[in-house]
Structure formats: C-alpha cells, structure tokens
Length: 228
Length: 336
Image (cartoon, rainbow over all chains, first blue to last red; front, side, top):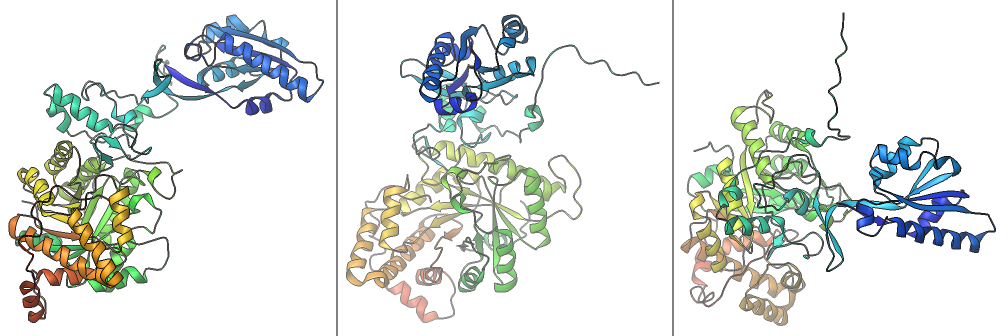
C-alpha cells in the first residue's frame, strides 16, 4: 500500500491561508487504512483549521470535510466531487500524490492543497505501529530469484550483485547499522532453500528504460496515423 | 590466462611478492603532497592506488592524480573507480580517458554510500555495481565494445582489480560475491586491512578456489588515537589485544616516534609471516598521510631487494619474537 504522512500543520495552514471556502477530502484507500487520510482525519483537520483561523483572524470560514472511496480513480472522483467543488475556493486532499494530481487534473480551476507527503510503497506492522518500504516499483521484478526479498528496495544501494563491503554482522552501514543488509537476508533465505545458485547468479546491468518516468500502462494501443 | 598490461600484473605473474601503496587526493587543487608521496613510495611498491572519493567525501577526482604520479613520479597507478558518483555513460568516458592517459590498472569498486560521507544530501548513482562494472570493463578491453556492443576505436587495455572484505561477517556471501566477479574476469584482488596472520589465512583459505592473486591490505596506525578510533567505531575491526598493548606501551615509552617504530616492527613481522606461510600475492599498504613509513616497513621485512644489504641483514636478524608473536590470537582485521 501507499504510505503517506501528514505534513506539519503549519505548512497546511500556510498553504490554506488565503482561502475562506475549503473542501477537505479524505481518501478511503491506503491513506484511510493507515489512519492518515480518512474521513475521521478530514474532520479533525477541519476542526484544527477552524481553531487556527479563529485565533488569528475574524475571517468567516466555510469548511466541508468528507471522504471518497479512492482519489486515484478518475470516475470515482468525478462522480463524488464534481457537483461540490464549485462551492469552494480550494480543496485540501488527504490522499497520496496520485490522488492530489487526479483532483488537480479533473478540476483545473481549483487550487488543490496536499495535506500529506507521500512516502513509499510499504507494509504496515500494526503491532509496532511501523511502516516498512517494500517496493520501489522498478518495473522489473526479480523477487522470485531473491527469496522474496527485494534488493532494489531493501539494499540502500539497490545492488543487483550484493552484498557490498558496507555490512557488518548482517547490518547496513547506511542508517547507522540498524537496517538489515538485504543481501545477507537473501543469502540466508536462499541457503535455507538450498538455492545458493540463485545467489551467485550474475545479474546484468538494469535497463532503466523500464522505469523511465512518467510511465503508463494499458488502454487501447493508439492508432497509427495513416500517412499518404 | 589474460594478458598482463601493467607492471603490477607482470610482477604478480612472474611470481614476485608485490607491494602496492595508497594515496588520497583531498579537497584541494594542490597535488604536491600526492606527487611527493608517490616519490616516497617509488621503488618500494610496484603500484600506487589513487582513491576515488573515499568514504564518499568529495575530493579531487582520481584520474588526474593517477596520471600525474605516473608522469611526475614515475610510479604506476591503480586508478580506483567507484560506481557511486557516475552512471555508465560517465564511467565509459572516464575509462576511455584513463586509457588515453596511459593508466594500466583499474580497481572497480561500488563505493561507500553517499550518506556516510561529507555531502550526505547527494543523490547516490549506483547505476552499475562493482560486478556489472567489471563486466563492462571486460567488454571494453576484450571485445572492444561498450555495453551495447558499440565499437570502440582503439579499445583501452587495463588489468582489473576488485576489493574484498576479509573480515566480512558473515564471510560466505562475501566470498560468493567475489566468485561472481572472478567468473566475469578480474586480474587481482586487494583487500581491506587485516591485523593478524590468522585473519589473513582465514580469508585466503576461503578464497583459495578462486585462483586469483590476492594482495592483503594492511593499515599501520598513525597514532594511538587512530587505533582507538578504529577499534571503537569501525565495525568488524578487531585489533589483537597484544598489538593494541604494544602501541599503547610505545606511546608511554616514547610518544609518536615510538609508535612509528612499533608499527614498523608489528607490520614487518606480520608481512614476513604472511609471506612465509600463505600464498598471498602481496601486500597493499594503506598509510595515507604518512607514506614515509611504507618503505621502512617494507625494508624491515627484508623481503624486497633494497640497495643496502646491511639493512636487509639487520632486519632479518632482529626478530626474536617472530615465531611466537601471533600465537593464540584469533580473527582480526578492519575495514575502513
């Protein structure tokens, strides 16, 4: 899932300072699941904004807080919001960067304020309340060969032929010897499975064209223009 | 077997026990110290490594000093190249430039991560890693083409080295990684530092099936502070208690001068033992900032034909502790 984190409040207040009519839109997708950008958080942000304005100025504020199913879906956004947005000067999005941009594209006349920073694609460990980055969307998955451990994401250097000399007792020098060395994890996993042949396999330089951005996928292939 | 293009490789192939040194261009436009350092090392080492932004500190590039020590000091360079700061296009450019400048050895490294250096905000590149870099070098040298098989006019000729971490814990993935690169085609291996013969043997045994010449790294202590820092802060380093003790006592006895003398004793003894009891191809001495100690250590081993035969006899004779010094010590070593 996409892991997001709310920006510091003063940054959100700063971006919203010139607008009196604000629509706060949460997203019931990833942001809601990790309790950063759902309806509840939209309502909390509404209360905080009203409090801040009351303290700083006497300006009349009109805020609506709501949430929609997914902000990264064009159709859902259109049907849920198109009749609403005209009543507001700006929209505060509690989604990831994909949601913010979907709103911006569908409502080009509106200012869209991102309330979150989009951090990474990751896993949620609810027990310890932590999120871990698990995928960098490199576009060329080799998890089958690496024991289900992604070296592109979990090796700080994204090495295809690790480990490097920067590990000690299986810990990585990047980040102060706290993170596991992905290549030692891969080694241990493959050794368990008696598949060290996969570990010693030499992997050619990556073709970065597969992750050349912006990427797109699907749809009908565009018809080639007929030339006379 | 691949051709020896460099003097370093020729001597290794001829079965000589070789020494290499190391010099570090710094954050300066002045190369005086590097060139003077090379002159000090000349005649004692067969080649000198020039570091490439070591531990991700932004210093002068390694190519210019590599060229200049060859031209100004007449010492062969081992041009260190990391994949941290350059994508494959820039690597190709620098490799071709090195060929034009008469460089004969390249040490292919991944490089320490940007975040451990003095410009931690930098975007790390790592387009290639040391293995894919070796692969590219082989294509350039052997086939005269780049990664996309585009033809190179006048392909460069280098001998390729890689680094190894003899103290890696766990060691097996390190060995398997070296094996991966050896299969692609490397000519020699230079290791991070070892501080005991046992540690050296441990690594040499684990890597013996690779049939690749290994130069073991040693790093004398410039001061007591440096030793303490390495013991305390460089993970994986274990300097034998006995050596620590000798350095500490030297400091008490006669300050800096005595530390230097003790270094010469400790490391020449270790080198002699390595020479006698292992199949190491040579020693890579890292004494950045006090290069003058390198000739003294090497002379004191008595392994190199030096001009003064009396000095040679002196150093052989004066080693009563030679056979007992390292008994009972376990695995040690360090990596910078």
